[in-house]
Amino acid sequence: MPDKSNIVSAYRPNGSGESLCMRRRRAVVLVLVLSGIVLLTVSLLGDLTSAGRYVSLPRRSWERFDPALASRTPDLAALFRSAQERAGGRLGEIPHSQAMEILYGTVADRFTHGDRARYNVFSNWALWLLGGLSPNRGYIQDPDILLRNGHSALCGDVSHVLLRLAERSGIRARHVLLNGHIVMEAFYEGSYHAYDPDLEVTVRDKSGQVLSVRAAAADMELVLRAYAGRGDSEFIIAIGKILGDTSDDVYLVYPPAGIFGESGQRPGRVEQAARHVRYGLPVALLAAGCFFVRGDGRKGGEA
Image (cartoon, rainbow, N blue to C red; front, side):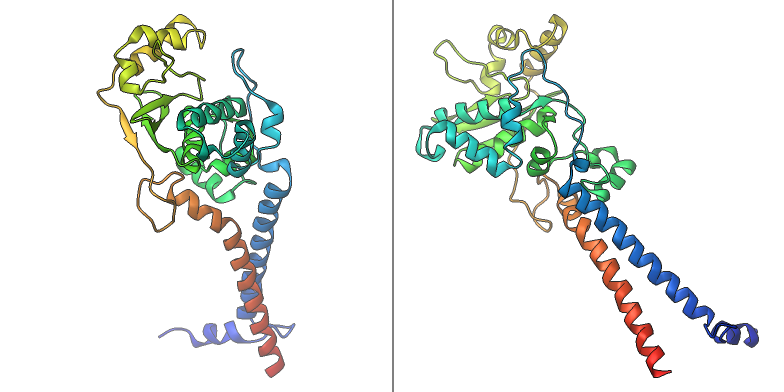
């Protein structure tokens, strides 16, 4: 049999007329409200100040990086508008080969190479926490977040931005995952054409036509000539081997984004969900705290 005196004491008012259960309830309310305020403040600071920015690295000697372009293109829509300004009209109304040249140049001008494009506690505290458990979860894949918070990214992210811009122009595009590097291909004039906006390279034939990954792999002399100057001789040889071996290349076309959509999206469903959790959870915590406070108020009035 349980000790009834202990059970009763949990509900018996103390000297101040407050029960143990009431004190615990108020402690829970305090934790809920403070947690909600802290998380909401952190998220607002990330959106309204520079606290959410990642570390952007300086340009390499051969990079085309344009700081003015980076400052006026905080999202994908702004970058697309900038490309259309360069085109002097709608990109969808000019030949796709010309549109891709403009888009490729715009993306090359917008980024420097860097591996620091990660979420911090201000840009998304949920993904920052997940990144501590699984490092890959901390990298930014969302193009808008990538553009808003800096100008340095890896090959997969930069080529993904170009891929999304191509799709906005009505051009079919796909990601090509090589064994150690990532580029994108755009489909026009009956075939695919490869663009490497990270290393700012297109491999072209004698007529100036941009080749696909497979077509470029068949002519290693063209590949080595195109990538000359992008690093030391050892690096150029390594890139040549990566592009020359197409046996394990992976071609990806991404399904429409959506938390409950198909798998294989970019950004992934976890990153998409975390965008909502970032503000949704603190608001829910504050609402729960207010609910408990109102409940206590009703009980106090009844007493």
